[in-house]
Image (cartoon, rainbow, N blue to C red):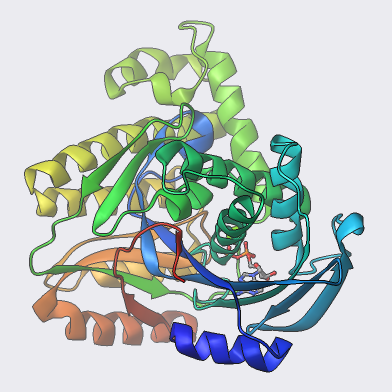
Length: 393
Ligand code: ADP
Ligand code: MG
């Protein structure tokens, strides 16, 4: 939808024009999976898909929420902001407003607002429609509450932290910072090399002459549920505890592949050992991938993506039949430099590097193989790497 069409939708809903329009993107992680809560780095980029928010003040001391993607409409009094019943979509928005005020008590909502959201991130695909919604809300309402420096890097990191706190407290998802960070700090044609522990980051140009980033959606109903996620967190903790008997560490990400050789035998729990081997390998692969990209060694970058998938499949065990079917089909196509699952795992999407001339063959072969193996139809998106959150009007 164009901003003009969104304005028309706002007028239809509320009988007047929106005063401001904002956009925040979804994201795809190129490499560095399940490293974030182990003190390691990730390497996501913002997409041109995302969430739009149109707002106008009202005189009624209420917040009115509408979304072009959702049938439910909410009206909440300004003095009654708290999490709404189960899974109400307005929680992603309300939470940000409340958390802005909590983190910055001087910032207050002085007036009611009419809000209209629209998103074009494919639903449930693990491309972070929720983070886009949080970050666009944090951007709009920090501005409404009088914050300046809207394009400053520190301010953008703060938007990500507000979004993450909202996801924890209002959606009940104990996510890391990657999704909201990418949505807030994205930069066109750049990926973000982010240390999730320190929040230090670097924008790295993604120059892929004649190669595209292709996202493939499994449309699988499976998700990484909080049980499987929490198991992985616990198993990594067990590995850290056992390693500490021979080498004191706080996070698995502190270990180099050379260190691994010397500490591996201290991990007596075989599952914890596999999980830790993934993390140590993935941290090294992520830093090697960033170096490869800087040197223009895209083929090596692709090989590291494929190695990442294999490690997530065999050691971390978070891929599942749908993601494996997509990646394994992709590896067989001439002109594919690498392919891996992206996001938490089990369902969601893969991300692949594909030469321009191979894209049609890739879609045909991977689509057919996937349907043969799973009975499901995959969707393909050629990703455009876009900017982070912004005000459009
Ligand atoms: P994702 O992987 O896309 O982030 P989540 O389950 O974390 O998936 O978030 C999806 C939820 O976010 C939706 O169920 C809805 O509550 C909310 N949401 C996302 N985009 C929108 C939108 N445009 N309008 C209303 N709610 C949205
Ligand atoms: Mg989400």
